Image (cartoon, rainbow, N blue to C red):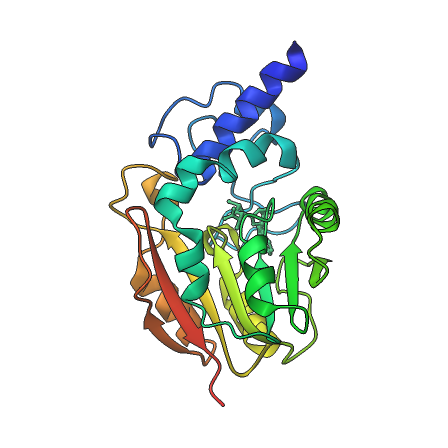
Length: 251
Ligand SMILES: C[S@@+](CC[C@H](N)C(=O)[O-])C[C@H]1O[C@@H](n2cnc3c(N)ncnc32)[C@H](O)[C@@H]1O
């Protein structure tokens, strides 16, 4: 019973993390499974990384229970507003490309990315959480996504070889990164010349999602990526809750 209650609490936290629950809705007890600085109703947003130094920018949050998050992150309700096929189409993937889903979580986008890259391509399912990486490893195995390679990454970069990515996508991840200046430079190095990353974040005016003070205006995200010498533009992809920024490594 306690376990079930915990899962429900975590699911609630998961809803908040993805903007599936009303902003500020009670997340009673969710903080109990989190470090003390992660408070209820604040999407569990703490001020410091896992045992690391705070950089005063993003806010690192632990995602240690994939089963609890999966129900919310993989729901038909999300499909309705996220339009994942349309989102992935925005990346302009052609078969054979090397693509990263950075902050893959439970692997919501992997089905689409695996299909778009095809048997000659490669999809790196990247996350900092061991539990998420284990989860997508098993999911790829049981789903037959043989071109998916799970990667346990460091906090400050994608953890793949330099110039090894043709495309990357980060959905609801950028605002979790603390030292985004460092991350943006490492991300640039991971992209091949001409390669591009799509950064998807919650709109400031979205009725659901993280508390306002954790949301990032598109201008800020664009400036952070531009500072790493990436060519930056607002993407035509948008939905009722999110905007997207496309950043390309110049050739
Ligand atoms: C809100 S979830 C989004 C999951 C997935 N992108 C989705 O849209 O369903 C954020 C994910 O990013 C991961 N994450 C946080 N910081 C990260 C970092 N620096 N590098 C890679 N992944 C990170 C978390 O562990 C978590 O799985």
